[in-house]
Length: 291
Length: 264
Ligand SMILES: Nc1ncnc2c1ncn2[C@@H]1O[C@H](COP(=O)(O)OP(=O)(O)O)[C@@H](O)[C@H]1O
Ligand SMILES: [Mg+2]
Image (cartoon, rainbow over all chains, first blue to last red; front, side):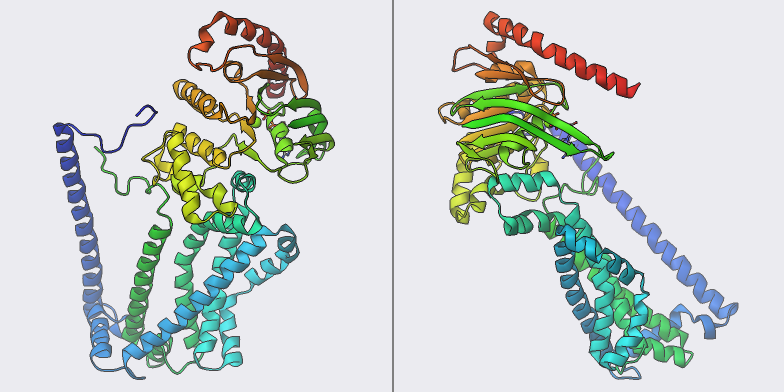
């Protein structure tokens, strides 16, 4: 070809192949070492906790890994004080997912609309600032009064936490759209709606996705705190009940379940992000083999 | 085709004052004519193009395209911006298909036309690449195809090749001449590179140091079709280069003195 590129996939000489495969092996060795050291750290941590709780400190207050594990096994093989553990998990999960979805959609829509309209943004700026300064977690108590002990009060709490996290990022993302891209689209013949859909939304996507990671964490916090403030089912209730009966192992066990849920959600969001941000250059050095 | 009469553009400057970017600018470009605009950096060349494209209204004077006063973006205008304006989240093919899509073509129709233009700018085989996977020169080709697929009657180009290395730039100039010849489109090509202006244009307008106004217009009587690489070595080329440079040099000098005054 006549132009200024090296074609991809050009035949590489044999010694280059060798260099690449040995570099790959080095990368694999490094990964193994890193994982090994991590496992060692966890083992040392849990082991020292177990030992000191057995011989030094009072396990009544601090519990110990074996007791927590026993609690988890009991919950999953038998039942909790409020019925099957799966019912509790599914309750909390439903609340978190509903709050996350509603808060996410509302945050994205309102953020983009306000981000694109200077006038509305100027008018609402002080109200938004004030709303952001409210300690929103306290609203959980209010929502229990408004919506009762059922799911809707927890969804409302999760919603409020997620909404603000997503809203501010969508707002910022919509404001930071490159003017050059917008002008180019206008010249090419785009109308307002087309600019919104083909330029503004995709530019804001990386901002929005970044906020969704922390937002799902907020959704779970919202649901659990909501359950704390009053509920008849859910992981928050389980933890609250453990606190009431001085069952510190139960608190840790609930914490572990919530952590696992949050990690799975994080992993799913990362998959979504990879899919949506395919067009971006790979993060520096993530998959590149350095020779 | 393009008519600027006494066009003036003022901006409010950051310090609250008024900054005149373009003052009393007169320029006429006929259909099928290739006009290059040269001037020192920051003199107001980009602003002039934004007036013609309708992206900015003039503060004074008249800007007309096709005999009609410019209020919005006029029909048939294509504009290749100074900065990269391809969408990073779209493939080469979908970037080029943007214009037809915006103008109401179906996806498959837009893609067919885009595929044709991707081939014409020499990017056949790269349809499914994302912009970050391309070299700077290839991204410029995408931008060129994106603009040309709309078949503009007026083509505005703002230093489109200034970020490229010398060899790639020469190649792109040749490519532009090839694609433009026979289209009958009017071109306004802004550059600060006099050599580039003379290789490409029928006329060269020299701008004053800012605020920009047309200082002098030179006819470039070099035969067409031109070989962008060879023509710069001919004695006719060197003659006209010397003549225009004489005029441009003073303005560059003034700009330089202002800059060093500001830095000192
Ligand atoms: N939108 C704007 N607001 C304020 N000043 C501007 C704006 N656009 C351009 N200018 C000013 O006008 C002058 C000319 O700019 P420009 O047309 O981009 O110059 P050139 O393209 O010749 O390098 C510069 O001093 C620049 O700072
Ligand atoms: Mg410029």
